[in-house]
Length: 110
Length: 112
Image (cartoon, rainbow over all chains, first blue to last red; front, side, top):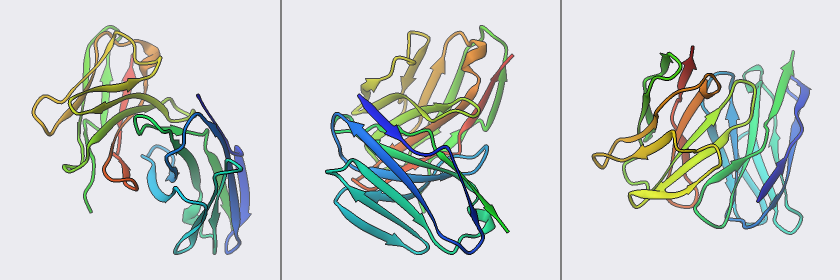
């Protein structure tokens, strides 16, 4: 089975940095995804990690440690529009389905 | 950028009625999925479809659910006899190579 944990909610100030952690225990591993989801909308793909290390994409970076079952999403230079839920999802070894964590709601304050 | 398209965007149906949710995945993708998200809850896997057959399904995907790819492009989810607890956002997703996993905009299903 799959177990994916992330904090429920985080608050940060506009212009600051926020790090959202995700830990997972899975029966197989074939990549970890981060998605952004605004209320009432679909998840939007942000990043994908399958090897250990940091992937940087503009203001967003994602890190993976497979040995620790750990990832984080780093959001820099926060903007008000970054207020959203951030979903961590793991693809297991079989079938390629994604299993999602509960999501972290990030509130950016002025 | 290619996208996954879902119709309708909203559907209201009476309890016990059948609904069909439609999706057009990205054309060169191989794996197709249905997920649902009850308001305020996590995104839950329903079913995956590969090579024109179900490759995996969750406990949620019971006998009232079925999927089809009738014409090589559309990918449908049918709920035969809807229940109040089926009210949710239903998302279709498709996966191509290792790094692409895109979701459609979703269908908001309301069962009354």
